[in-house]
Length: 265
Ligand SMILES: Nc1ncnc2c1ncn2[C@@H]1O[C@H](COP(=O)(O)OP(=O)(O)OP(=O)(O)O)[C@@H](O)[C@H]1O
Image (cartoon, rainbow, N blue to C red; front, side, top):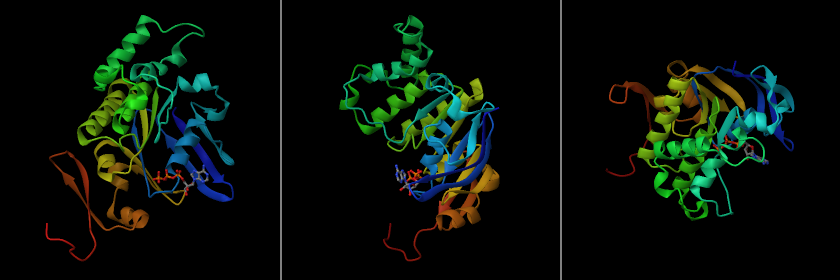
């Protein structure tokens, strides 16, 4: 059933940043959210997660208002890789990934051998085993981001929400993370909704795009239908050329720089 978002609006103080958004997010697809800085992408993720409540309209998940789920219930359904993850307590990387198992553990019970196996398998898969005993407070931004991704996988939820989850990652780890998300969708029928700044990365992985401009939906649909030069111009005010790239087997966007050639490259 997925998410049914019905006419939601949200303001910070007096300023409306989400304006009458309606969306159906069907299970089993990779959705990308694109749009300029400050257009409301992270706020939309917070509304989907139930962290924020809309001032009008509703976010329904599996036919029920997301705000009526308990925190524990939601943690078994939705896992978030946030844009920023701050921690000042010296947990090790493995302890953080193990936190992804908490929603599945009976109250006051220690983690089982099954929980530890899931954690260790996921750390292996995400290439994070090498620093499992290191403190999160002593890791680089990209290393921390990979651990928070591993924690979200350990939660074993049907839905993954990613808010610029690859922003600190090098190209190898970016592709690894996106491949893992795509496999989770294909093999386990999961749903992913990812805020992505890199339009070409979204084009390569996302089956459907939600393009936002100033808090409203500018375009929504299959990537090959909505990723057009017209939409990019309308939303980002940038000229572009869209083509199919057989090497990456995906749509690519080439952007026009300023009209004057600045340097000879
Ligand atoms: N806690 C807050 N209080 C007041 N205004 C906020 C708050 N959080 C965000 N905003 C404002 O709401 C608008 C939407 O913010 P949001 O973080 O959703 O944008 P975004 O599309 O995710 O941006 P970016 O691409 O820069 O991450 C922005 O103008 C931002 O300044």
